[in-house]
Length: 103
Image (cartoon, rainbow, N blue to C red; front, side, top):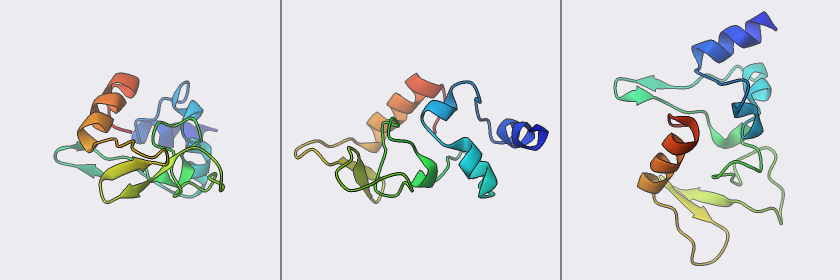
């Protein structure tokens, strides 16, 4: 458990909250780390996003046909409901409100 907690701290994972939206234990077991850059903290891939995540997509290992969610077109998230569109700027604001950082 100490190894996971060390990984969580290194990757700025809130183990009390983030598990509701992302399978952090799966990401840890897979050896994933967030990418970091000079402009800020990166984020994990969609592979371990859970269905409750605001940008749950077909790229998640938990997605199955018929589930709610969307797909990515470059940097743009396209929800499955026709006519819906979420811009990257909106996602950034949403993430900051939910997490205080980009997920």
